[in-house]
Image (cartoon, rainbow, N blue to C red; front, side, top):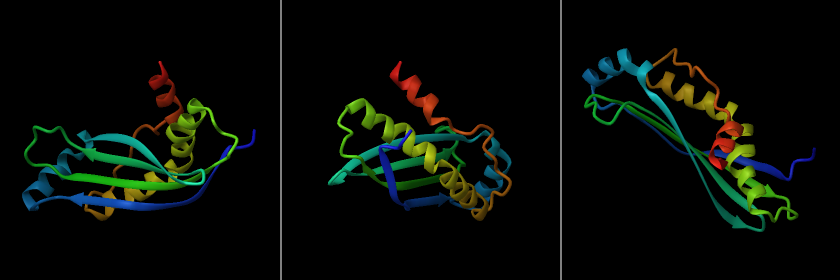
Length: 140
């Protein structure tokens, strides 16, 4: 099957690692395995069938914890969609499923490097994110 889109570029739009002080670092270092990974995807049309797809990953603890660190990245993919794509559902699938599945290995590598370089080595995400499954769940 031929793809009806092409990723013509990707870049880190925004990246943040926040650990406010040493006591927080020590606390978080021992509790980071309890942090949750959250993902959001948004998009906007740029021009001539080009769409900016932003995949945002946040890795953080529960809101009520006072001593916490925050890690976030916005990874932007510039996508050229085939002019034959006119169906809204097909466009939605490209943005929410196809593009994220394709860029996720790079995004995960960059994000894990951010965590390591922020002083939290050895973090692994237990499950790979299946954007196809998330898309199907959203449709139901």
